[in-house]
Image 1 (cartoon, rainbow, N blue to C red):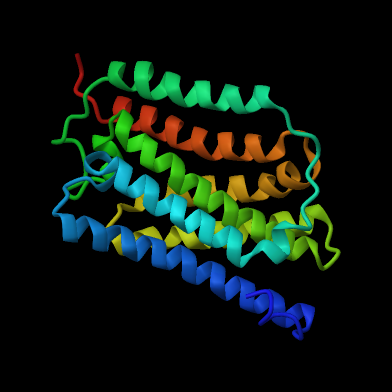
Image 2: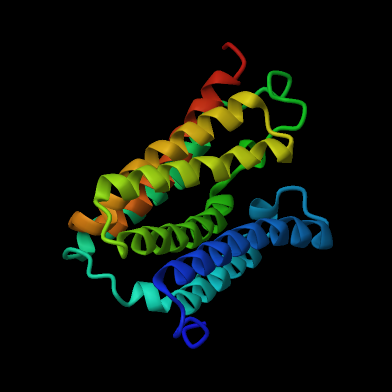
Length: 232
């Protein structure tokens, strides 16, 4: 892809990259359901965590390869191991300790076609972690793309917030409820607004960005378990 972009103007390169990002993101979603149907899975991430982990790791590596002309210019503030271990500890604590202790969801209170995360276990979040890694690679590419035009961070933030929010609006086509789509879209807009500052101007920003992204799924899962549990 680098060779294909060599003689392109910066604007043309940006358009091509945005199209490829959208294609990769959409293809990964379509592929998720294709694998699920092919293997006859009820809950993809829960029933085939290693398959989907490898699937999204492959997409992440493909994204890094396709967008290396963007990623090689990234000069993030210093990173160290402690924040990485902190995020990993957060993930382990939620999946192994908090998640099993949450109140059971009463399916009579849930939507008629409940989202899969309502049935998540620890293995579900193994695969989910790799999906988030893939999304983070695409978000970083978008941030670097817009930043390459010399725009200020708040301008980049506004664009990322709008694009990330718009993408999550597409959840409505998966049969999700309005409340589900609304809270994921609002969260995506909020995350998109802060991600550029984290990735470009914050120490350990990539780790913090990943942790914040993952943390929303933790918070939403806890919220869902409590709001849809039967009164004791």
